[in-house]
Amino acid sequence: MDLKIMVLSKNKRLKRVLKVLLFILLFSLILWRLKEGGEERVSRPEEVLLSGLTFLQKGGRGAGRKFGQVRKNFAKTNELEKENERLKKENLEQKARNNRLYEYYLKQRHLVKLLKFKEETPFSQETARVIARDPTNWFATLVIDKGELSGLKRGLPVVTEEGLAGRIFKLNKTSAKVLLLSDENSTLGARLQRTREAGVIGGEGGGLCCLKYLSRNSDVKIGDKVITSGLSETIPGGIIIGEVSKVKRKDSSLSPWVEVKPAVNFGRLEEVLVIKEKSKIKNKR
Image 1 (tube, rainbow, N blue to C red):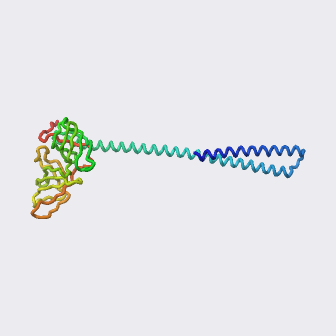
Image 2 (tube, helix red, strand yellow):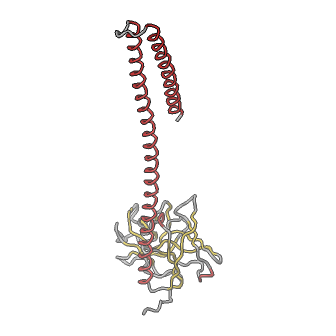
Image 3 (spheres, helix red, strand yellow):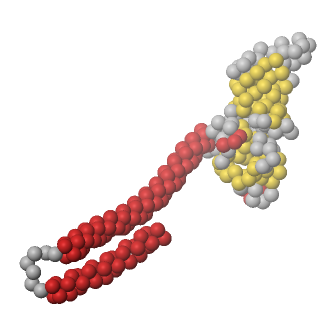
């Protein structure tokens, strides 16, 4: 903007100088002609003077055209910059709208799956939303927005449409703290779905679990499904826990070490279901 102002100022000054100079030269020419009388032939001084005037006029017009073009170019550049900024802003706004719509779509798709699972599960359940997590250990605990006022109590299982996520271990009137399956302090009864062999599933940290206390000659295999045993007072049997991902047999006299990958992705938990009563079957229409 400063450069544009400087160019315009120089253009005006040059025009003023050219006009004054042209006026002086024309006035001198008139005086010269009056002094010399009515000669028909142009004298040498007049010829030089007229040539100079012609050159100055052409130069002035050329300079004026150039400065005018510069001014137009600056104006056009300024308009293009404004248009570019406007298009950038519109592009960012459109991206934000698209992101909000995609987020809404994903959320609705998840809620539809959760609702379908809720309708197909024959237990009294409470829908809850995750409102906080442990920033120091993402796979340890989380907090949901339902508590004693919603009929929840300690030990109740927390599930998603994928399977078991954990169970409640602390609560107040309006919220509850959930101990996730992958936490090292988490243990509960489990069973191999294929062989029906029972054991205990415990958290290993880092989002993984370990199935313990299987027999030393257990037929456990990679890919076997692990479910809840149903031997707990609050957790029904048959809820999917995860899948066997590793099996190690170090000594024939000891139980095999069995790693289990949970069915639930703990990092994506947003809405969950709490199974309120193990023995209370919902009335179906």
